Image 1 (tube, rainbow, N blue to C red):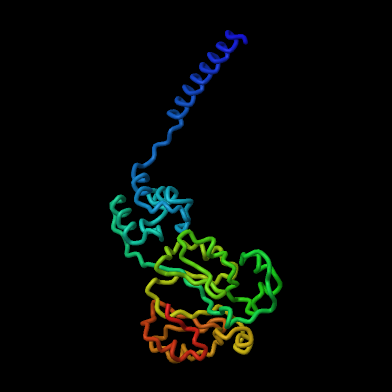
Image 2: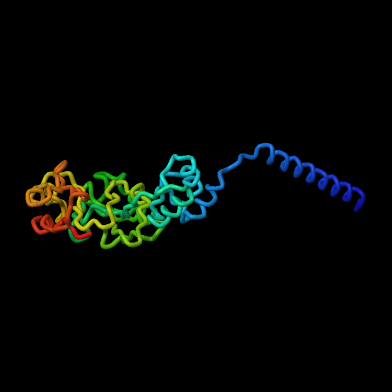
Length: 265
């Protein structure tokens, strides 16, 4: 063993390491970009879930956007009003009232109510099943497929498959919107947390076709609209919609619905 050669190699590596470290230190100072100290404070105030529900790449991305005036102080759907107030205090502004939202799956076609065209035995993924003929195994092309893509996407364990359809636990939901992105049928939307009556259907088929495919489908009869005392309901594309800003939660629409698909949220 050549001891001098080994020693020389160690010395050379140590010198190179020292030179490289010195170079990196100088480069770090030369190219250092000063950041607003409020970014760090806002990042610390945010929940840290990095869910992307705000539309920015993680909590640090949102913090930078808020400091730069590109996002409001209440942009974090997970943190809600409490975090919005803390961020507003850091920014020295007033926080607007933040309305709590929750996801809702607009389908009640569970295993007992929705007909099927065939049995699907592929991957347990709604996006894969939706590529099959008819948009999936259910007769209703608009219905929840029930294979859990939304469940996998939810970072808060707020959505589960129950009897063949996805159901949201609105108390656990943080309104991040991940489930909305994951649903190939676009059945999920964010509604005010305190919404009481929701139309649990997304079908745009004519009434007779709906009844052939699902026992829990909206037939677009308009009885809910005719009987709503606040004119909070409209029929669009053969489907009833409730304007939650106008709805006073009287329940008349649910009583008059012949298919009983206006459900208490």
